[in-house]
Figure: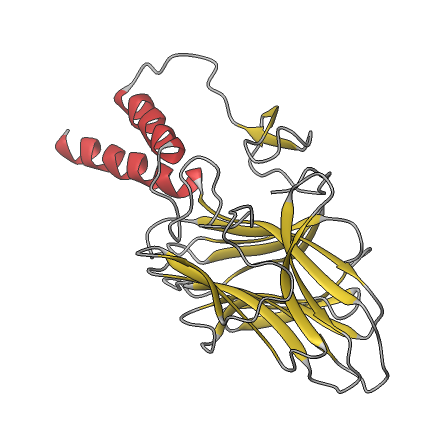
Length: 295
């Protein structure tokens, strides 16, 4: 996890505070607070649902407090040094695995970098002139996101280098070779996105550039609501099929031209998966219906 300013959009906010992952960085996020004690059974159930949000078991085996995926801040001492050459570079038994590969290890690289302050992040670099060459890093969970709770999966991302180079953030239904459930392609400032069977293009003000920004996907498998964000921009907001699940979180940088470009680096950090309070609130609404039926 890195000490840096990140452009991030708060969600469903009422009071400004600092997220647990960002307190040392001064990144503002939001939380909802209750200003009075509940006076009904429904109020008690709503509070219980919110309490469950703070004590959840995580999405994709993420940490219930920070929301980070296992190893999602790349800070563990047994992550590989730059120039690693193993396919699976971090295994969390019973939870998931981080993996990587490159088209050509001689010219395309994946690594975990230690910054000057001791923090670490992962990088994917391509510097060859053959179109299609790529470097990939992905996390595959032992389970999946499930079909009963809404979630947000996010990562801090930054790109330094020259265009044209494609940069992808993808959420996949199974392993690394499975179909994309969600994706954003940051080849240019015109971001190509997919959500379920839908796709489109969003003209971003910044695109993915040399500033760390939080990129996120939200999905509610109960009602199909989905949206994606890049920093302060909403890339898409739509309704798709219900019941979709995600098992792999993947990142790729890829050459798209035959002109030689050097030092094209996609950096990622703080890869997280968190359940959303709105989904857990459905439990309280269901309980309310039960009370009404008993009257």
